Image (cartoon, rainbow, N blue to C red; front, side, top):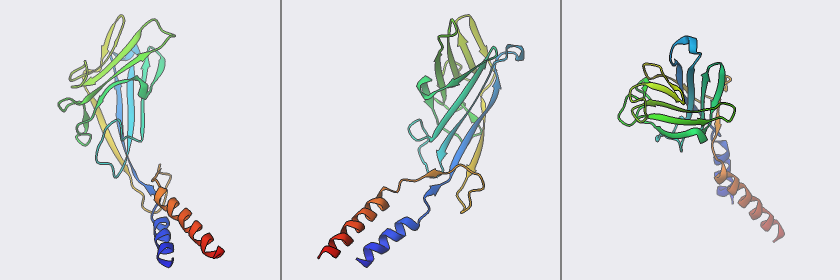
Length: 184
């Protein structure tokens, strides 16, 4: 019984938070600046993650500004998002790396296809394709990596809770065991 209690206390005493790694996709001006078209984004992973893909990111955010209107790109808008190397400082320059988004908006008479990198229509460029043409940035996203470790203090950093299901299960088991022992 004492060893079970010790195991539960150890499980609860371990840190319930893990740090995160954030990759900021720098703002790209697409077309000429008078078109008011730009695109930027951000994805975040747990710092202990070893597989970087759509299934493992903690958060995803991209935003397109097109002719003064702002479009938030949701995960449902992703047609393809392939990650090969996020530490290289450039997104889309590795074989197969890049993304393609489709945005449908009933308030405008056309749809958008946004493509960047070698996995998309833009090849080694980032472009917005729409009914009456396209606008391209002439390059790929630069990536800015930020690691926000858990060093015992929050310092205003985003932290992600790790699952504590084992510790919770052990606590429930311990409660039932002690209730059963008291009845005997």
